[in-house]
Length: 489
Ligand code: MSP
Image 1 (cartoon, protein in one colour):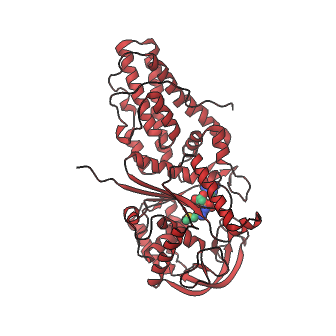
Image 2 (tube, protein in one colour; image 1 turned 90 degrees about the vertical axis):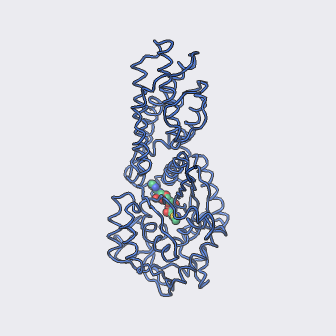
Image 3 (cartoon, rainbow, N blue to C red; image 1 turned 30 degrees about the vertical axis):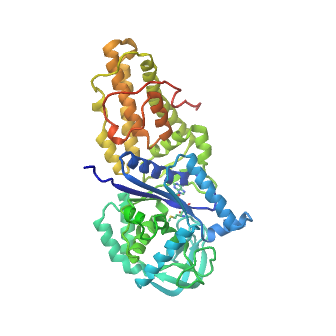
């Protein structure tokens, strides 16, 4: 009997189409891609979703500034996201846009379900609004009269609005957090959320009468649905309302998000799902920010790094590797080309590139049959890698792979294969070629291009996680170029 495949559903936030993607955006998508690829390697049935958030005031303003028609503007920007993710080798299974009909259809059904549950009512909103963050704030929440998240100016709002009874779900949320200790991840960010929820939840204004660029509120079409409420529903609308796909993939296994949007995903979204009679996701993982000289990378600060320019200069895989290796997932990190260059030279070129080149050069000239005893296997900390990947400790996992690469390089230095012949050489090559084959599997989620190149040089096919152990080496060596070239500092 074959075991049933496990399903795995991972999402990225959907990106505002007010401008093209910068490195901070690329980061969310790259880490999600690595996790999705890892689960495919395990043989899971994976659904990996990304997309664009196309409604709301912020987008209208951006289009107006460019003097473009908003529809044409979002169309163009959504296209730039798609092509950017393609260039970065992102393996998403779907790309949802909130201006698509399939999204709107599910949003209506969702809102109706919330209404049927008695969770929506009409009232008046009075308070502050930050357009760049599309977020409401109370007087108390403001910091020196400005947005507490981005520090920009806020506007005063006073208008008729429909509300969601978020307050009703306080206890249910706290219970859910308590029973699902993995939900609020990383753990060090959970206390803040729990304390805020314990402090009390105010009902949420979920419609805007003055915003026209949005999905109409089905209960009163003079209003449009608050962009965040509608955007969160993308995670379901990509599956279809009560569809087979929803049955298979919902609840999501991981919503990967940046820390500034954790509240929406960890509090508002699960409460909305409770209200609509659906299960909350299993995990919301809030990662940190990339900064430049200590300041969050963002369009308004004017310090954004272009992921396409970086990948063009250093290679897509060097960029992907650097972003996950440099900071533990969850922490903030400062971006610099110097740090990227150092990792490219010292780790990708000197450790991995060199190992492959040295081994393949000797193996290509060897005409005996390759076989022996797996002497290097003990250095491969497979369990640790698997555990770390499962815990989303991506930097830990790749670091452990690197320890193995270093162990292989040391083995080459100790065994001096260039001085060996016959059976002894066959044994050393067996260990090193099998190691390279396994390394290629393990790095494939992080650096898919490099893994593919290495497979071609080894003359082996794509492996799965099950193949990441010593067996017989059946490749046909065809040494190619160095996997990575050093760059001038
Ligand atoms: N549209 C909302 C998300 C809706 S999800 C239902 C949004 N969009 S965004 O384009 O502003 O941001 C998308 C993602 O990019 C967020 O996860 C955010 O944290 C991430 N990043 C934006 N700047 C970043 C850095 N400087 N560093 C790391 N990630 C950052 O929010």
